[in-house]
Length: 288
Image 1 (cartoon, helix red, strand yellow):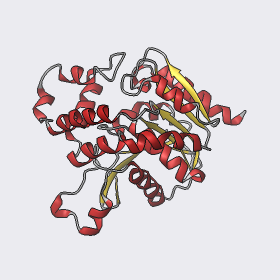
Image 2 (tube, helix red, strand yellow):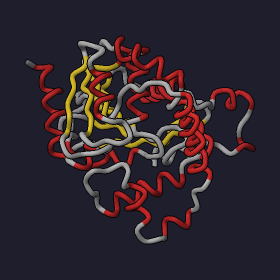
Image 3 (cartoon, one colour):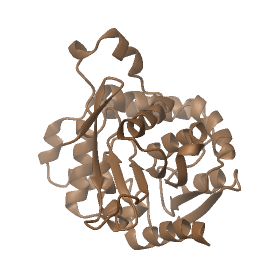
């Protein structure tokens, strides 16, 4: 399996290409959300691999991009390993540099979409077009955020691997994220990624992604977007409700908005055909 070292962390990545792809095929990079991995983007990447060379990678501390153990971390590396979402955006820039890729399309989901938005505004010259799936802006509420951090901390702390072997736990785990059901294998992969996520990364990104800083700063980030962007919401998303996505999209004339009916937090999996139709329509509009 291919890995690249970025800021002292071995990052897993893989290519999804059609057998007859050309050397000049544009690159689309996929970013996953909190607690997940690039695995859930696989089917979407395969569906558009005739138009794009698709680059999937696991964010630092998630999936197969494991953080080094304490004994392996020197002081220089330790100063680079933090959980700020801006740092994850810089990881992406370094990944592209290491692979010799100058300009890409982005398709990012949930927390990954926040990272992608930060990347868009720091490296606008490096992105042709972007798709932000299940993203949005939310108001800061100190009491609610503290309660969320406390609950999230407990959830991250108690993740016994035994859960992987208890029948039905995957269905219970994914219930809040979905409006339509997914195959059991996909549900199990989500549960596995969550259980195996690095503690430091899983806990740290709870605090950095749901924070006063993000609540106050992301409206400005969305307003600054100059790159043609599509923001996609699931109609019944309970993690990032559709109205939050529509509000974010309204802040920039460069952001289009699409609502995928009868889906939750994973519209690309719950209704792949409708999701792909929206994405392809947006991408094709550049040729009109």
